[in-house]
Amino acid sequence: MSSLPETSATRILVVGDVMLDRYWFGDVSRISPEAPVPVVKVERTEERPGGAANVARNCAALGARVALLSVVGADEAGRNLARLLRDSEIECSLHEDVNLSTTVKLRVIGRQQQLLRIDFENAPDHEILQAKLTDFQSRLAGCDVVILSDYGKGGLAHITEMIRLARAAGKKVLVDPKGDDYTRYAGATLLTPNRTEMREVVGRWKNDSELSRKANVLREELELDALLVTRSEEGMTLFSADGVAHEAALAREVYDVSGAGDTVIATVAVMLGSGLSLPEAMRQANLAAGIVVGKLGAATCSLEELKQVN
Image (cartoon, rainbow, N blue to C red):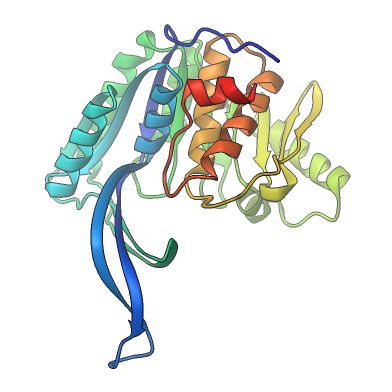
């Protein structure tokens, strides 16, 4: 049994692409006469914060004090997202862009299985992003750890400058990356790519030693303190100047892996901010991820749930 640190005084600033996750649940009893597709009779709907907003929710669920900075549209989805976040006791600064549609991911679920996902999105306006950078600068003094959650939706156009400002202020900066150009994340404390994202950047590897070599080359090129690669059923591996640390995947029923990466970066941030070392924070993140993959959709792991598996 290991004891978890006190997290209630830990302050996390989350910046990135937020979205609204919509779920339509229904029964499937027949195939459409119009096309060979199932007919879903929708019986209930649900909305949850997604993307960086889900990262913020995960931090709050672990007891930390959380501020979220992002851009939304001046629309119903943006208003719903703000309301849901207020309910989670997250301090929000959601800049509105009248030319933007809040990103919405609509999932249609039939018989506990995702049948279809429909995405609604466009990129935010440059002027709104500039205002967000000013807001970011003013919030740095009030946080212990910064999480930059990049979903490739355009909300982190100034990420290189954000990393520079945060590091100059002495803050740890954790980045959930996207795309194949990691040079814009140079200087961050920690990057948390998944296995697929890592392959996009360094190419495939034949074995763990080749992955270790490629990861350390990338870490040194980008001047990162560490690189945490989440590897699905292979667990997660931390590469730093101190060497390689690994956590095996927890053998439990996997129901839905969506949002597991959000839980990982949130848990590492809260645990680092609360005084744990990186390897210890990774261990807790692995336990938390094992809990959320047993839940549907963008989910969280509470501090109480984490205590039960420690």
